[in-house]
Image: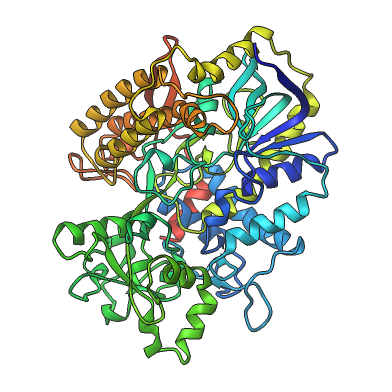
Length: 607
């Protein structure tokens, strides 16, 4: 039996992106011991890829903005199946969290008056995204890391957790391995915060990096936690489509926020042809200048249709491609260069506002975005579903297990508004860290049995068993087959027969994965790492497919060709995913608690 190192903390944070770092900072501030485990190097979290900004009603650019408007926008964007308490807390607390980052050293773009600059983004009634050019996530990570290193947090980099360990129904620790040399680690903890991000690597075309294999969702599920709303996978409308080596890499919504327009192969702005009724007004006098985003407090605001919600824009691009009006490589054209007609010295302006996009297209595609349009198309970007948490504390349905960020669910409902993800990380990262620390202080040390540790160790070692026959392509081929299947059968437009086929295919892949071999030893063995990731990837894919089958309607990021309309019976319903007593996945429907009258009034006032 292989040896393992045992390490004890009061609170263990799994994931070192914005949510994990903010949770670690908050928990550590109480004086307890905090451990931080990250799958990659510290500083390489997926948060750095969030470019456009973080949404917070600071009202620096438009004084009419408020938390109430932000709350209403978030609920409307989520088609009202959000956890309304989370949406309320997020809207109320985001401004303080942004100012806190500023106090910790974050360098934001500024207005002429010296306030934090804010830009427009899809689905937001006012300019609301505090930003640092198009590198906002990078600045968030830099700031949180610089602040966090002084808090006494013990960091374990390039370390992957394979199992959560239990003491009865309470979480008690985590079993992990160091990726470089394959050495095992047993982390004992009174409370654990999951902050592992999303599931994008279950799809072929994605903006997500290799770490996003659904680890947190899978670990929580196998520990007995509920997942919710896994059918809602956001396909960002603008990812790179050419050359093939960079397909799926994100093109920030900030391009459209700074004036970028979408055109088809005929050079037409096609977004004007399909504006949802709740986002337009019959009083719009010149649609080519922009459509009117009407609220009771702002009846004359003009915003371009390119800044509709992401699910809608993605479908519109797909519609143009299917009609034969797409770009040469199966997307659409995104043009920011046209602003030279409106803005003096537009080239310098674009390079200042969108420096990463300028260099990204220049280096990877040979395109100068100051003079040429970009080719873009939908890419798997974010999952709104995830671990079910309490809106106040961020604790899951398993005592002592908390979650924050993309791996948690509830805030975004059926579709996330751009910019809400970064403020989500710092608002709920703080709350998760605060309540995890409190749980650790109020509860004694849990016990972990040797049998459970040995079981976790044997499961991790299984792919290295020399008696296993090496499948053709091994773990890589299984992951490739899964990605192809999910992209084709559970993608942007879905229908029942294809999703049922995907579920059957996933079952077959699970059988192959159960016997996959990763020849070699534990040192420097990426095939072994991929084999261990398959458990999470297959769980996430199955949860998405089964949940999408159960929700027989189209809503937000979940679009069905066989149920094209939103159905009233699903208006206040979450899909719940949990493990049955037989070990099989069960998906049920559950009503959302009724929204308080005062919050309902806020929504009505801002329609």
